[in-house]
Each structure stands twice: as structure tokens, then as C-alpha cells.
Image (cartoon, rainbow, N blue to C red):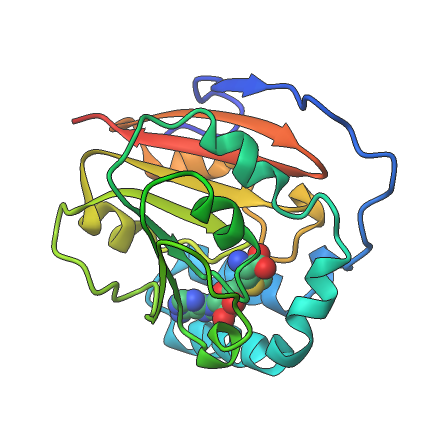
Length: 219
Ligand SMILES: C[S@@+](CC[C@H](N)C(=O)[O-])C[C@H]1O[C@@H](n2cnc3c(N)ncnc32)[C@H](O)[C@@H]1O
């Protein structure tokens, strides 16, 4: 098995604009959701860790929009990462929260289906053209095997088994964080690429305070 040190180095794109304002200090490494995420990365079927995450963000939902709207570079990795995708007929977003990345996706052109397990988050999301919201758990996405052309997540929890199940041949996964390692739900792009394995071609980059990874399944 390859490690972070000996794996093939993926293409990293430099950030086009570097923000003047510093990122928020979220104490990411000690954040409750980071511990749950690490448990999930070790065992994607750790139901207690998943339940902890669902509860954590359900509790945060009432303040989420207000908090996120003050972060000016919040969705920059999604905008920049989108510029690298192959055109798709529709887009699925996972863990959409109150819609900060959804807003960017809704302007990209194809229809968007934005999903989150917490209805408390979805009720705070904006009405957007060509965009529908759906309550769905990322572990059990309501899509047929091999049917989704593009999955997008910003500051979400990856479930690679499920992503691999629903993605179409040649499907794309755009995985972003707003603050890189300063994001509580953070997986380094190289680590995620390593977890995905050799059937995927990846490239990554920085944007705003964050990072993006675009992984394309080799059809
Ligand atoms: C850190 S928030 C990110 C929200 C939004 N994407 C953003 O960047 O503002 C993580 C999101 O993942 C959602 N989430 C947690 N567990 C989930 C699960 N099992 N399935 C789907 N979404 C989940 C939470 O409800 C929350 O909205």
C-alpha cells in the first residue's frame, strides 16, 4: 500500500488570489467533529461516530448561515475547482448545510440536487434557480448505482464506498474545504487521493484559505 510520502504526487494548482484577511481559528485539530471524522476514516461503518456528527451539526444549524456569511472566501475552492471539471448534465452536492457551495453550483449551469442529512440545515438554505434540496444521508444516497456524473462536497464527510457506488463511469468528485487543515472536517487531498486508489485520477489546488481535490474515476 502506498503512503503519503511514496504515493504519486498529484498536480497541485497554486491559488490565484491570496486573501488578506486571516482564516478563522476553529481549533480544528481538537474539534469534536475532527475526532468523529478520524473514526469514520478508519471505519466508514462506525455508526456512533456518524451519529455524533449528525447531532453536532444539527445543533449548529440555527447559527450556520450567519457564521458562514462572514467568511468571504468560504466557497472559493468550489468556484476554482469547478473550473477544472468536465461538463456534466447535473450535479449532486452532499452535506450542503445552508447552501454556501450550492449558491456557487447553481450558477454553474447544470441543475443541482443539494443534499444534507439535517433538515435543520436545509431549512436555512436559499431558494435558487435550477436547484432542489433533498434530505439524504451521505451513507445512503438516493441514486442508482453508476448514475451520478458529479458529486461535490464543501467541508463535508466523505463516504467513499457510497461515492464509488453512485458515480457514473468516468464520474467526478470535487471535494473542498474552506480553510484547509484549519477546517474541522478536514482530510488532506493527498490522503483522500490515496484512499481513493489507483482507479482515480486526481488533481488538487488551493483557493482562498481552502483546498480542493478533483478526482475522476478512470472509466
Ligand atoms: C461542516 S458542515 C458543512 C456544511 C456546508 N457544506 C458548508 O460548508 O457550510 C457539515 C455538513 O455535513 C452534514 N452531515 C453530517 N453528517 C451527515 C451525513 N451522515 N449525511 C449527510 N450530511 C451529513 C451536516 O448536517 C452539515 O450540514
